[in-house]
Image (cartoon, rainbow, N blue to C red; front, side):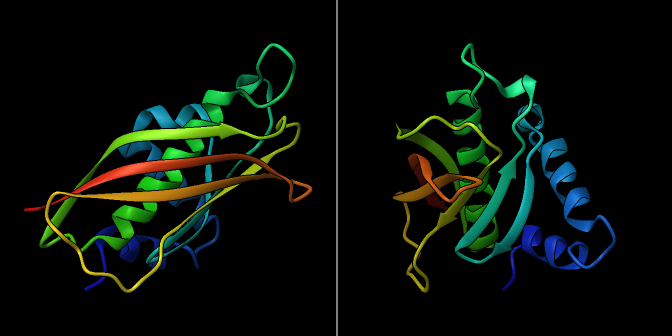
Length: 154
């Protein structure tokens, strides 16, 4: 059974500006993410990719992408991936925690990838650790997050 969010993405990605519209719709559902102007560039069960442009609104005091903007991108990417993956009829999820590592200065646009191994058995009261890698335009890993998603049965 395909998750509702994934069905919407599959329909919209082929439209002109479809990925842009989908990203805007996700930010409308979770408005805080709009502050980083993310673009969801790929979505399938177990995998989400998204990017954020380097712009003044996400800069820190030294002119690089702020640490919290990177956290927001990681949480968005992980949340969209989990929502597109977890079987909605039987389970639900909520972020429970995040551990991050700032590896290099993010001096360009950034892109994130959240990925888990499938297939898998979904349990009740399970901590699913979602690794998210963030890269700059040169392919250098600048940030890593492990996001703990709490999965429960409905």
